[in-house]
View 1 (cartoon, rainbow, N blue to C red):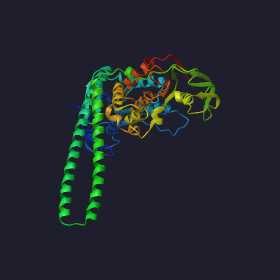
View 2: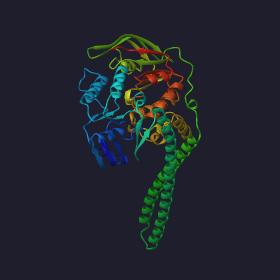
View 3: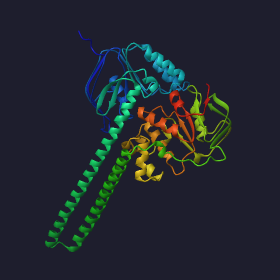
View 4: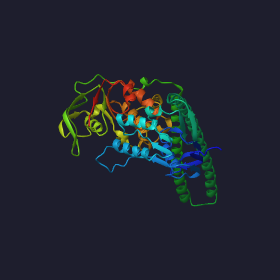
Length: 470
């Protein structure tokens, strides 16, 4: 007798409230004891799918059956306990779920906010877990323990068996093909717009014939002139908008296709920095920072210009606070701080300070003063998806927004000499992580990075580390 699957999803469909499909006709099966990682690009709907599999959210259609108890540990943590850090709260929620010992444990980005001790604990705990396990994560340290992956996309879900590194190579190849399909669709849109424009002109000519007939019927000339003037203004405005839209779409499609056809090295679009100034870009003199009644750190002195510094330490040790001081976003409780904001590029945790209404493409054309061809080449060299470059930064995921913010900073007429990045890898998908690592390893300026990701810190060429203790 064949054992019942632990979980079976058949033809699931789900769309966002705005109508955008998250996934269509998605089917998957989990047997008891299966260990699977859900992976996919940012914004594809992995967290929503996990909620559907956990029974927290209902799909729009399809069938889901589960023969066992399920527990979901979501991505967000309950911050009502102000005495504990986000990492401590996440570890508590993970421990409670493990202690409950469900037949199916579903974890959404469980490594977020965990320090190195927490990551080591989680790896040991999941290695010994004996029931079904589904994990959504971009953390390669965690994913190297998996050999089975569900690749999630809007079109559905497919299984991949193999190593994490082999999966990354396959995804990069598929991303290149996806870019080619996008540009083909964009070219089709341009042709469709041109067809609509030609059709509108044909309708306008028919209206002109109607005006001649009305003149033959003897309508008052002043009335005819008023009608003609209003119609001409409306048609001229509509025609101009159509022409501009067609020209813009055609120019962007052409520039993007040319950029896609050329494998431009990243070094070609990174800025050449001027000689270092006489003064540090940012400086702290015996500063202290306090959170509530607790002193985070004190007597810290730093002077940074083109140095490459990693800031490490356990949760709630003050890493983000130190970066805010260096970026001039916060004043110390004691000591002195000075920074030249024009020489610094700062991206806060979750890219919260870059929630802007403009798109990456708009910012490259306006603030960076690039032409369309240069903007397309820059976007391609940084491996940023062309389709996302046209969307407002506010609509992007934190990981996508971080990458867009970096492109904007590095392409400014006067690029920063020092980049300050707070947990830059925490929301990046596989391809975004690889692109960021390549960028920072080639960046010739100064760098301050706070991160728990030891593999990442080791790959970007840091010169020294500052370790904060709690």
